[in-house]
Image (tube, rainbow, N blue to C red):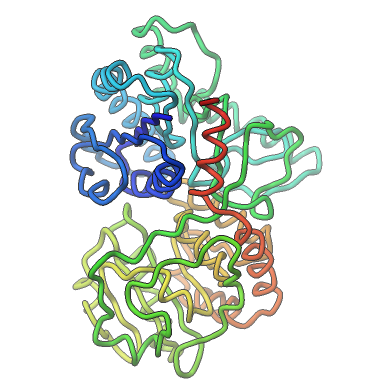
Length: 440
């Protein structure tokens, strides 16, 4: 079986391809991987032959949430147009039995359709597939089933397709025409989702009930990024996190190993892991208020800045009390000791926290993050706060953190999701489903 993975030009989506490649390689597949030139370092240690698909187009965010969302999807489609030629060449040259891409892999989806190659997608965010009972993707609206709320879903969905996503939709239609593909009525948000097999990272307990979820959608569990080779615990580790019997470099638990009893905490308890992800760099959005709350409450915390600079928060290292700030710390070793995770709402990090039975406090409405927070709250595994809350009302943030760390109901909700995730494995289950789908 020869599989060609093709990643969209976003760091998290590229990284999240690795477990599927490892699972496919373990089954004896010949694996190739096309990645954006500037993200080739992500693929350096993956069990796949790497191919470049061109540079990533720069993205300049617009002011205002809706303008930013509209601009980002328009940017993705423009990037896909530039990436189509090398993508088509790769598919023609390698002649794979199947193509694997993420839910934003427009170039991969178009090339596979054009060349009549089976293609599979994986989802590492809220489930894109629409349903009349489900709030439209990106709206950040709560799940409600009474008829007025269902009408709301229909109206917001139509407004999103015609307004917010209008530019991206037009570019997608133009790309199809350029390739000689038939006109499609699929909304651009769903256009890159495979009609053959979709591997959704997550668990049914974290997704809204649907009237008719397609049969080819399968939940495959939590992505567990390995601790990078050579990473060592910072000097503050013992003071903030405490002893970790797993040791530096320990890999994630295997599927079927429950970690939802994560109750070991740093001395004094209440360890908080906080992150703002790899796209948001301004610490005022979340991290600065979190650091202030942790110091005032006397709680231990590990704060990772990702795209931001630790120096903006007084780091790297200890910044007061038992609060440490670093650009990067592997989540897995920290979550073994955590009581709560505070995040702007990245799917992979939130899912990993829940896999450890750690409740999530999701803050903000950037990108699709509020959709994630709403799902966590609906599942009874954490809390959602609007974007204006932390900086303007730190007391509300503190109450949310303290509740998530102590509320037995939220911990039970997180444990329930952890138990479901523990039975699934993206690499193992994904590879088996791909092999069955491409029928090799």
